[in-house]
Image (cartoon, helix red, strand yellow):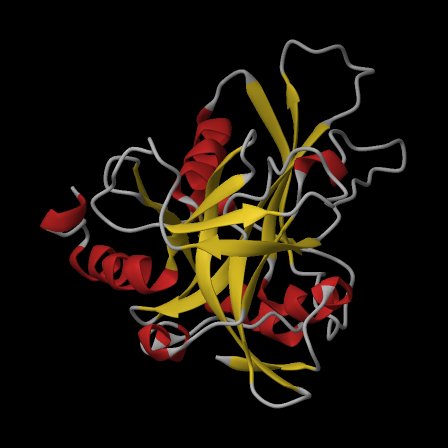
Length: 277
């Protein structure tokens, strides 16, 4: 739970960027020509404090994709960084070099159960740098009482692939574009959607997006807003974006109150609880 300045709008992506973090990978295919520019990929997520650790939190399938890239012998990893340059309170525009190969991955991606989350616990070296640059970690108060809140609106934040550089340019840089999109929540998924063990966050995108595809947004935070007075707005991270139906523009998310206790159990016991096997 936190407070946003004024009524939320699309110009506040810098403010909500305090909850956006990305693992950015520069790589090349080993069979590519030497004059070909290195490729670039951004995996967005957020920070969460759980089970005594501060973790990079994203969708499970996003973390699985990153893990596959790191383990693929056909790919040469050139550079990996934690991009924490999205907050309006940042003091440095330089991302943090990240030795991701030596970090622990926790991944749950089960479509039948409706679960899609993953986490990498970060060492204090990284978390201290992220905090200094304005990145804020979610804590238990963000999800423990959400069932008591009546939300007035929702928005999702992330790095759409359409607005992300596919490769590194001649100066050795690549760009991403944090985007905040409003969504309208639906109580139930569309007719014909397979039922899941756990309920998912379901919402619909508007028609006035600056992109035609939201690929790349998976793992980004979905915010719920509560308006309290003319100029007072409180917000919570309610879910992580997981998937979408392009034709109907319906998005699905894994709710934070669902995933957080399961992730805590996974990290504490070293394996998922029986409910998520």
